[in-house]
Amino acid sequence: MIAGRPLAPAGAAGHARGMDPGKHQGPHQLQADRRVWAVCSLAVFGALCFVPVSYAGSLSDEIAGLVQGRPWASAENIALVATLFAALASAVGWVIHLAVVDLFGRWNGGRPPQADDYGEEPSPPTG
Figure 1 (cartoon, one colour):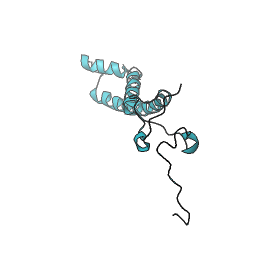
Figure 2 (spheres, rainbow, N blue to C red; figure 1 turned 135 degrees about the horizontal axis):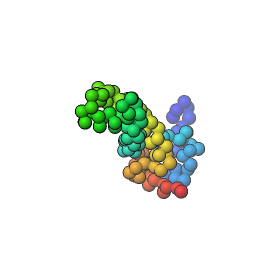
Figure 3 (cartoon, one colour; figure 1 turned 60 degrees about the vertical axis):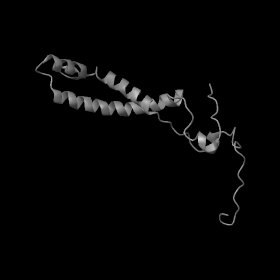
Figure 4 (cartoon, rainbow, N blue to C red; figure 1 turned 180 degrees about the horizontal axis):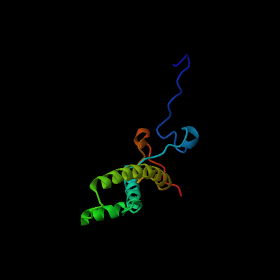
């Protein structure tokens, strides 16, 4: 008993099947998938490598200049720009990945994280 009231009786397993979780469990929770995030972040980082950042050109031009022994290319500049690009790609990749997972689902397509807690099979995908 809580505050003088009896607890509600528990139903049989599967008694909540068919309920609309959006109406009963609060706002929609965003699902995260690290593999999708990694792919999105790498794609953004790859695109950023071709953005001109200095008089020498893009990050890929700087790396090519360093490999070829050009005097204007420096490892310190490459490391700084690559670190900044990695941080930016990580943040932008996170936002893109949330949209991708929300639209297309998780990469592995497996059971929802709490499906075993309820003893029910996940509902089939819609659409």
